[in-house]
Length: 110
Image 1 (cartoon, helix red, strand yellow):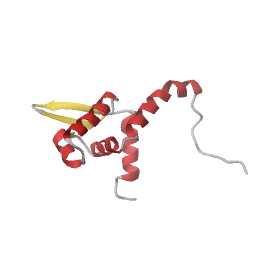
Image 2 (spheres, helix red, strand yellow):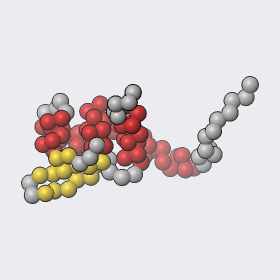
Image 3 (spheres, rainbow, N blue to C red):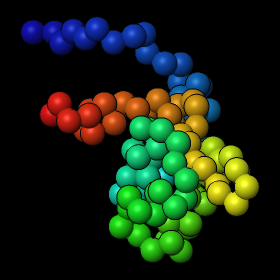
Image 4 (cartoon, rainbow, N blue to C red):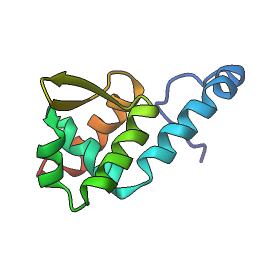
């Protein structure tokens, strides 16, 4: 029996090649459990570095290193209020993926 799907039309192979690197970098950043946990926390809203430090089981140094990776990959945004730095989830594909993962695994309905 032929297999039918309700997928959208196939993506243009040239477009797939153009975006493969971006998708690969996003998935590489998400593949680390600590970074994924940080991003899932940020899916619930903005947090200061101090708040994140209290919610993840990482040293301050390790947290800073993971946040630097997330910043460099454009997955998080920052804002400064006096001496406090706040992090939030960036808009775009990364944010959409994190919100999807959050809905699938973190909303308590599973």
